Image (cartoon, rainbow, N blue to C red; front, side, top):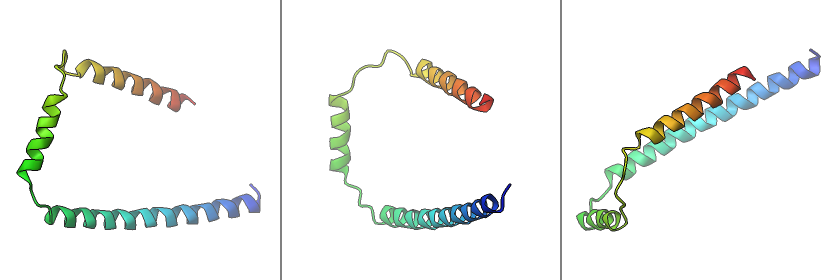
Length: 87
């Protein structure tokens, strides 16, 4: 490997490390904001009832539990992972 490639790889590692540190910091800030919002949350039973009613108005009966759909997704994802591991 040439010196330029090694230098570029080292610079990229430094950049990646800074990005990861920034996201960790951002994640901590977002977690504290979320915690604060949850602490200050005011429960409104009328709003909750309205949202549940809206769900009931637009609900359709299910003919299955969704297990078949989940199995289909798992199979699809397994195939994708196998293809990625081969390539």
